[in-house]
Amino acid sequence: MPDHSSHRDFSLRGAICVSARRRATSTQLLPERRTMEPRRKAGPRPPAWLRWLSNDAARGIVADEFHAPIGCHFYQNPDNDEWEVSIFVSATEIVGGPLDGKNVPLQVQLDIVHVMNLFDETPTVHWQSDAVAEDDELAQHLSFEGTARGHRIWLRILKEPPEGMGPGRLLHAGSGEVETLW
Image 1: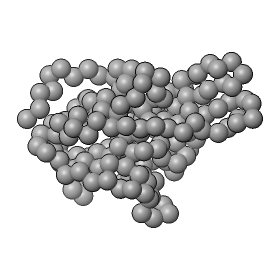
Image 2: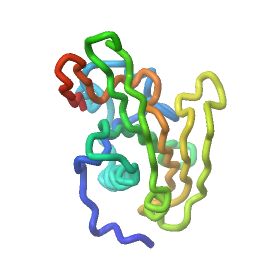
Image 3: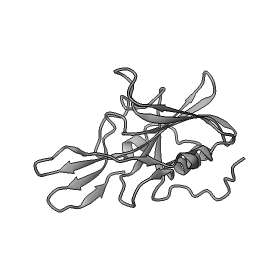
Image 4: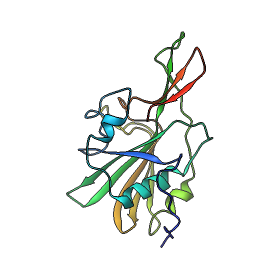
């Protein structure tokens, strides 16, 4: 069983988790906004153990210190008492100039062994190379299924933020200033 005693909650690399009121992601319930604050108030706060797990999983995303904020959606499936968690790096939107409104492409690298070690036993790991249907909001992702901290978990690390999520930060073209939104 992994040692969780050295957990640090909500560091710079931590994930901001919001409740999904249905399976997969909550993008239809949480339309694009310029601030994350209303999303944080949209549903219940995740249990402490789930925040810790999500933050620890987010630390598996290998990026430089300038990466965009990391988001997290969670949902407890009442049918099988499994927690579904989706983690993603937010988009960076350009403001001003000829590329105004465009999102800067993301580069996501994941330390798979780090994420696997968060589980009580070796999880089942799957890779989904693309969306499997038009309404598949998760698209490309790695999926980890198993037990973590005594709870059944289905963890997905997404290549891109769910559609409609909105940017996590803005890049102002005129000044080069980066503004973090959430």
